[in-house]
Length: 362
Image 1 (cartoon, helix red, strand yellow):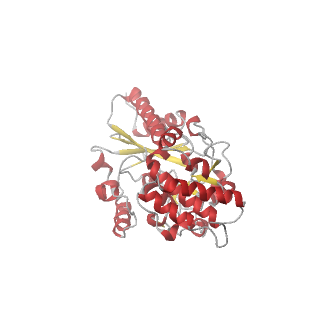
Image 2: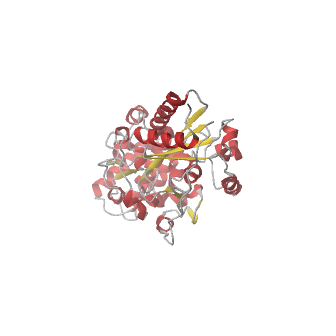
Image 3: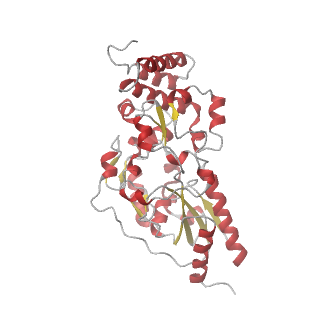
């Protein structure tokens, strides 16, 4: 006999936890309220160059349009904070170091999450027989935060990321769209209160108001999604962040409850939690591809990687704490790379070289 919706839902939550997900919730497909907010955000142009938002439009908020027959969505969390990674603020305070967002230090999460969701689907099918489903891990037009919020996994913080009282925000989200009739979890209340630390700490003031993000100002967007030149006004604010930015998460009080990754795939690879700008700037394209094999970093390509590092090296020259020898080495490395670089990278190298303080040896 097939389980009742209540029994099957309870079983799915249990099976999900057995497969290593840190939390499992279930919700329906009504995202009308979130759709209106999405369309308004896009109308203001706050998605920047992320044209995929325009291509999919409102379909992002309509699960049944993406996967016909979808009735229920299983939403999951998977912690990613790598065990033993060098403390983030310490890396950002070191002018010679490169900061890489903690989520990108291990294996590409898209693959890990989809594989686990596939196993969950197989587990369900082994009990009830074949059913229609499709797994997502930030890989399609899915409003994952909105779905996770409705599934009771947390609330949308003022920085627009999902927050949970028992887990903060250092986790990936994944979804399994299904045609199953299930019991839904209740959303949780917002617990941000009057706190504004994420808004205040943002180097580029990308959080333009509580719960409102202008991606065009966000360092994660500028270093990952943006394909062209980084606007000059933002370059000094990027510091040594060469791939992504975690500032709004690092200051969030709820992240004192964040758990470490329990998935070995999310362990630090190739020492990227504590690597120098000069080392990674020297990578050829072949070396970049080798060092980022299986990593989310690879998606930006070698050109954008060098663009980002050139900006960070320029900021190192702007700041204090470097010896004359290190400054000279940075200038020499930038100058040597200039003529062999693409126009995009060359523009950022020229900007970096121009950051040499007056009186410093050219």
